[in-house]
Length: 401
Ligand SMILES: *Cc1c(COP(=O)(O)O)cnc(C)c1O
Image (cartoon, rainbow, N blue to C red; front, side, top):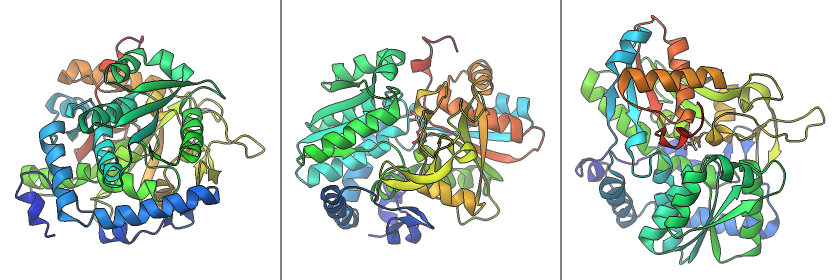
């Protein structure tokens, strides 16, 4: 299955690093499969099936063709001239906001639903925070003819009303989660519970979190972002970027961009966490404020109280409002390959307005955290930079950001 296979089709190969394929569920001490035995055997089966199916050329061709014709990939790498001038650095935006359904989440939804379909699954369930993953999932289910149930915190249902209507319009059933804080963490809990109780369903996790093999699968399907960006920057600039930047909720758009550059030591890598108000109890900056614990099936950093119990995160961005984080980002933090910064709500709102006015691009409030970090760290550095614009901001217009 040569790489040429994909390059010939005008879309950049989805070929993960050897390291990613050999991955057995642990990044250093992080990751693993901390779930009940019944679920453990199901996940083991899923992992084996995934390893097998992703090696098949037919599967890869089908995935790439859908990315190309249905999603509109490759997404452009756009030189933001006005932003560059304003900041004093040469800034390219990786335009995941241009994808069908408006964010990077569709890459993963297509990949996992294809896997599920090949396994003979008839019902897809998923959790959603901002509603972006729910919309992406409902979209792909409609397109591939599968039943779809979306679990969503009742608070998020209120603050993302338009996306709820979009999901329902696509034929999905949206289930309100009224436990806990009624946000993303609670939606994950209820979706996991349903998955355990309904063995014929397939749980489509939307971020780089949860038990093995989810981080492996999500990282694989999102690696198309970094593979494309790397080829595009080499074509446009003839060299690698000095720095790359992405925002983190669970960490999927960030790992999607980062994975292609991890072995290029000269490329500096920065992650922007949802800092909220940047205090220990009003934040979603898990890597800055959290501690490693077992949480939702995996060992990684998590926001906890003084007794080590997970607490609710707080961020203006629904897609970043999650107390857990990807085990690979935990590892990249500890090994210092990536620097993770906390970006406040206020800084994100400023970047949201600024990019809209300077470039005619309204970013998702999540992505605005990455823009804000670029504005801060790249100020007058003249560096060559790629910022991942993970999604578009239409969904945020109704709020007073
Ligand atoms: C969901 C979402 C995020 C955060 O999720 P990750 O898994 O960390 O990428 C970021 N940006 C947008 C637009 C999103 O919808």
